[in-house]
Image (cartoon, rainbow, N blue to C red; front, side, top):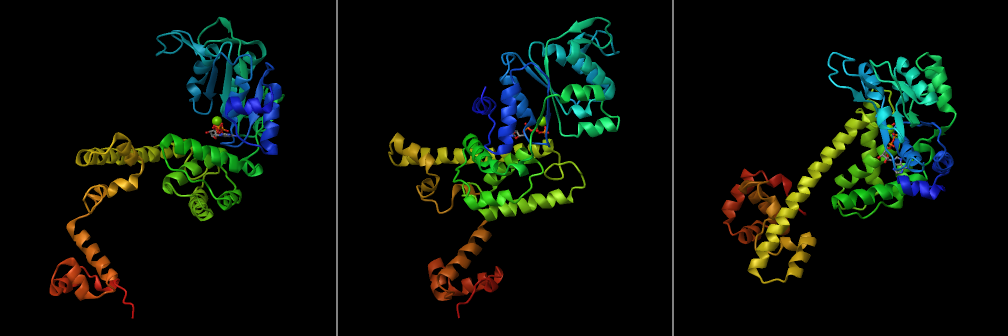
Length: 400
Ligand SMILES: Nc1ncnc2c1ncn2[C@@H]1O[C@H](COP(=O)(O)OP(=O)(O)OP(=O)(O)O)[C@@H](O)[C@H]1O
Ligand SMILES: [Mg+2]
């Protein structure tokens, strides 16, 4: 396998020296049936690399079972990994397969292996060495044929010195280690990643995308990206939502990053996550924002459909034309005889409307009240009263 194939198979983006070294290593070891330890900060692409290793192996047609060791409560982790026998617990009414059995013939990815309880580690070592394991509560040894990939963002060597990680398992795992450098050490990849994420996101959400200026990319080089590629992806997606349809400038980027850094500094959490929320929470928030955004789009679409069917009735426009009008949003607004855009209905009342109308008419006529009153079709006295009532006076700048 060469690195282009690795990139293509797993959708890994990058051309920096750092990512190329990772990819070369993946290309070398993917097809060899040995365990691999993947090291890297949060969001650097450890899971992506595990997929690349699996897809590049003879096991590709079988399953890749991903287990987040840090997320499973200590009390049930062994039964999750190795399964249990009926009656092993009071509530174990059935026998159950564990992940090591499910992954038979395939690959198991033990994510956050540094969080695995030390008693469980010895059992994992046994599977690694002989493929043997026992279901919880069982006395029969079973065999499984799995390749083990493991990942951590912790310093396993340090955990070993602190007595929190078994040395034998550590040595066994670290023979082949892939270190993924943090994004701040491979800034050349930022442009490619931004392009890809922006295109994907704008396409799947139907957002107009006008690109990022070269200066805006440079601005991103100045930031240290503690949440790495995941943070960059979230960043690109949020800026596209916030600056809907605009070309992204350096200023937009620095403003948004300033907000993120502020959040990050306010966090007293030492974990390398973006802001004072964990990556999962940040993703949930992003999804929520996307949903909100989608809802807005649906409203827009409904409106466009309504408007275009109206105009179809009123003027006998051809199907092609009416299809066209759903594309050019701005055009439809002027197609009916209304002065107020449909979307704006419900957002204000007659007072707001009258106030704005008076202010803008006065501005238009350079604060000439007689001309304004005439244009507004009200008496000058009425206009004076309304100017007072609405407190408009202060707002109108006099030219002289
Ligand atoms: N080189 C890359 N090319 C394309 N996408 C990437 C790359 N690296 C990471 N990503 C994307 O960034 C996100 C985070 O990647 P991934 O989940 O693999 O990181 P991780 O190291 O496992 O993070 P964590 O330690 O938080 O579990 C994913 O959406 C992934 O697709
Ligand atoms: Mg991960």
